[in-house]
Image (cartoon, rainbow over all chains, first blue to last red; front, side):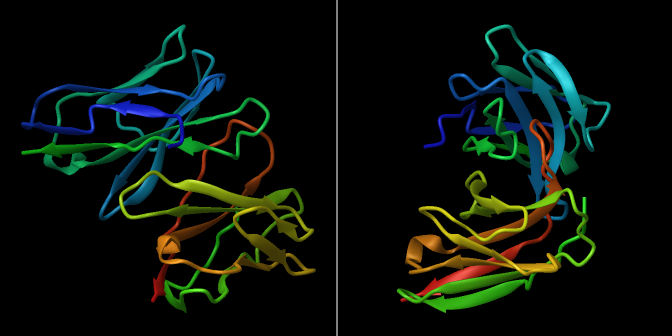
Length: 113
Length: 111
């Protein structure tokens, strides 16, 4: 158990819909990262937040957005869903002075039908 | 971030040492080598990292060649639970930075 929690574990929804994935980082970690893992693209970095502010952006689609709240939990919003958005979505957090040591949550498996 | 090359798969007998190679011939002076692993469909797990000296922790050892163009992750006594995809990542040091995962090496530990 990494100490990072993600909900829900599984999500099945239809094309065109919108979903919200939630992540709670480890106690004391200020950084939250979101990654997407699909069969064809592998594990890809989407976005990073640090203490409520966006810090880095990766291959995140415009249909996707994220935020980090004052209590440091984060949400990833996916809208106008397409079949290709089906993937595992991981959240990770890291200690302030060891950003390389990222602790990953168990992931949310999103299936778009 | 420098590009890394890893074999797609390796086998190892349970109880033996597993030596996973990684080539990073374009690594620059301020880039570190990091290793993560991912057990089937679980979130990746940090293993170890190093700059130029060999490193050891409770999980593994990391051997970096003197020219820093390649490295080897060593699991001294592999168990069935070590079966996973192992990722070698090269990036600059510092905190709060994204990780770029390649395809990694699928290590299968056989009984």
